[in-house]
Image 1 (cartoon, rainbow, N blue to C red):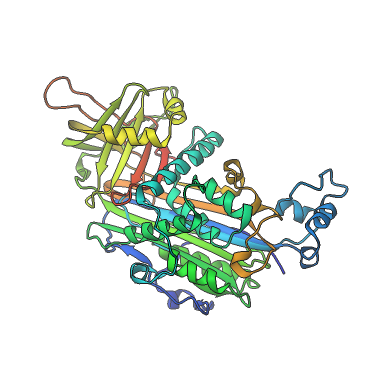
Image 2 (cartoon, helix red, strand yellow):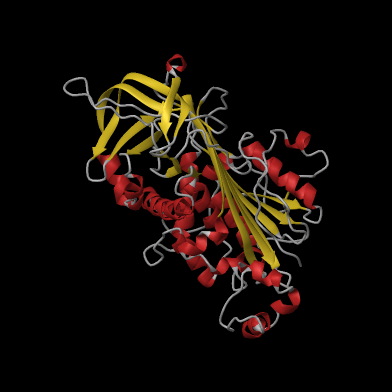
Length: 519
């Protein structure tokens, strides 16, 4: 058998039959076609919009070697290469040795931010809330799930920003964690433990069954109808023709993660890439494109998770007030950005003197919110180092309404793409990328390993709200009250931002705007 690798997904058009004239999109037997989890109605107006995408690819090891005892396999792999028989090998190393990876699994996560609207992978929507689930045990409560999500957010963020400290960063921790939790349905043993502990779950206190139920309830909450917010989240599995998912995995994928599955001919890599990329483009309303590239002929399956969000500000900025202003990228470098101006407004505000930063919260019409954190000049690294779940909790609890004379925020569009297979091992997730991976709960095969995890996010912030697309930068200027000295907060230098769900308290998107003009 061949191998599966994870690649970025391309954008999709809306009408599947029209878009796939030469590629048949066939629901996999036993996993019925579902409506995507969706919240709200589609709207063409601006605001905050974001999309995030992650791809996980699994490959197979050589069938001949897979039947050998592990010690024999490892000895054969490592002989003459300077490795001890106790070391595991990555898929890249296996290929370098001339060995065909057994089976690769692809995972894709996509999401969209402010002007918030989210798309789910597949037609999963209403059914997730009504479908009867056979799993027993209480679901993980939303606050505990949000706490783990926040811990994972900051742990991952610190590693991403360490690679490029002066670059824009934007990602959807919810999309990544959902995709990995979805994958863990088929993981066993140490592979399962590493994935869930890497997501910052305490398995001593919370068994994996409760974690999966928690994600199910989270997806239900995010999919509740809303006139003010368009939000979609979804999962899908693209499985190579002739390969069958285990009945339990199919049932769990459908019941817990509202996933749909499609039979895919990976032997025709161009058609398979188009199928997956069009699917993602469609589900993210054209915000995520060209995510999957160069699929291996031996790809076994690709897992996809996406989130699309579009939301309008509760108090929109007046486009007539937007003007050109300077944004201080560094002490010596400035760029000109379109600066939005919100006048005479009362917003949640907090000044953190200990960390030397100012926090402002802007609400969407749905009452979901965007949190902006503006460190004082030269204090960004100190604020980033202090990021912990309790830090965010403290900021939110300390917010108080303040009258702002002028609040300035850059109008911007930023995007990021990450190969997480190089980052996740730093969080303790290692075996799933090696020949010691145990993903036997997916197809029953013991020769599956993940070759790539690709995550892509696009975020647009405009006068009306948040939307996934392209845009420029903004800054926020705040004044601390109508009575007494006025405090001015000007987002004319690098700042942090987060988009939060009011219902679950989960971080939908997290990032840093280092340069609003840097797409």
